[in-house]
Length: 397
Image (cartoon, rainbow, N blue to C red; front, side):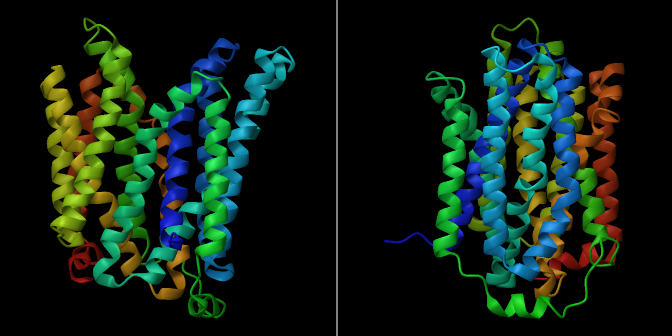
């Protein structure tokens, strides 16, 4: 029995999730052991995120013109190459085959490939699902794509940790191979709708500031900052507040796992098993985020912290697919790739701005950062209620 093209897309995003999470786990300590500073290491990922934000919209528009399949494959190949290009300098430096002064630019180049080319897969995948799904099924289809990536982020450290026992390089080679397998599967099984491709050649281009685009991008940018500030502060927060616990790395790993798993469960419950419309997903999901951030800041115990993380996962699991679906439903068929690309370009904003906005707040008082995120989410509630296109998101389905 052959695997469908959409299933290969899900597997492709799963492989991307595998590598993305494991890279963040392994590369920073390896780079520091080889003499790079924390600032240099964080800069490697910041430069890549900037490249991702700059190219995602381009790849979305390109998929409108040249087909979802071709651009999704190109992104997976770029991601596969980037994994090898990232681990190779670390391996060579560890064997004293690469000059230490060349390590930093080599790592920047390796990760930059992911930002410049690997960014193509996500907008092409979401645009394909938009092309081939009905309005009634759009949200659940997007949620399943998102869940595939999240499953990869959960499995990455687990599978990568096992493969790491063979050699440090093995996880990167295996994950790179998985991405190539996904690319071959997409090439063989995915059939792009020709009607969309032909329409896109004569369709007027939409801009990020178009009335049907910018409200969703603004929402996504604030949501990205809230999520990125949480992800980048988890390790510091647990270390600073719960230092009396033994085996802090386990507590940190459990936090990431709980967040990802609760997000996946939330997406299944509220978009598949008991679906509710996009407006309510955005509204009630954001309310959960507000409650969680306030609780996390006010009650500083490990049990309440874990409960808050689970509720946060539910909130993100409701808002992210609803936001992507609402944006898609507000566009004409020939502009689906462009819209998905614009949304993809906003996703890294949180990771780029957290060091300058969130972390200075955290340095004053850890609780202040989560109060700050709560206030941002309150502004999102007002935005959802007051802006007409967001209010309309409940009626698209």
